[in-house]
Image (cartoon, rainbow, N blue to C red):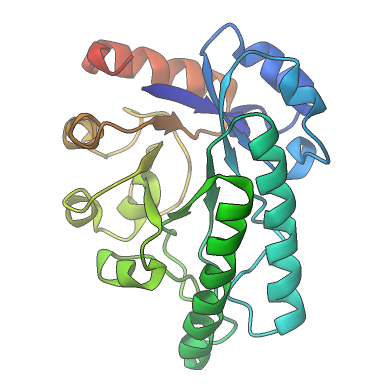
Amino acid sequence: MIGVSTSCLSDVPLEHALDVLYDLTGIVEIVDDGLHFMDNADIAECFDFRYFIHAPSRGVNIASQLEIIRKASLEVIRQCAGIASGIDADRVIIHPGYFSHVLQRDIGIFQLEKSLIELEKISGEYSITFLVENMPEWNYFLLKRPEELPLIRDFGFVLDVGHANTNSCLDEFLEVPISHFHLHDNFGKEDSHLAPGKGNIDFGPVFDAIEKNDVPGILEVNTLESAKSGLEYIRKMRPGLF
């Protein structure tokens, strides 16, 4: 099951983005941020997609040592969950957050643990599933490598293939249970969100893992042309995923 993230059209309003994607795919992951931030489900309800939602992340940090920020972040995600439930988007992807100083990582982990307990309640309230995504190389991010997976407890795991490549640990991540994939390419240094086939990632094992786990793979690239190129690449390499 292959879909496309609205990230490829982040510079246009959500309604325009969904209109364009309607000709490309029946599966869309809305990045609920920036021009695509949703106060309600009205725009999404105008289109007949199978939806997933990527919760806001730019101003959100569920591992913040500042309790007021952590709680506000949870309220933003709660609003996102309510909208997701209204459009039958049963999966909401979230980031694990980050800490403010290398010596405060343990505080970030503690705050993340509190947030996950609260997110379990929100999940039940709205009958949606939260999935946690691995992060790219940056000193302050949590969940960059497979050995950190216990941090997310029993939550499902989103393997962001490009992020894993920046941390040189994609092969190790492919060995663990995966609930959802974000598909994009890079050359191992920058989180450049290129179309698959345009960087140095070997996508053969990635496609094997999608089939093995029987879960969605979402193209999370930075331009519409990259989305089209990525879809063409996957159809050529592994048509059975569609």
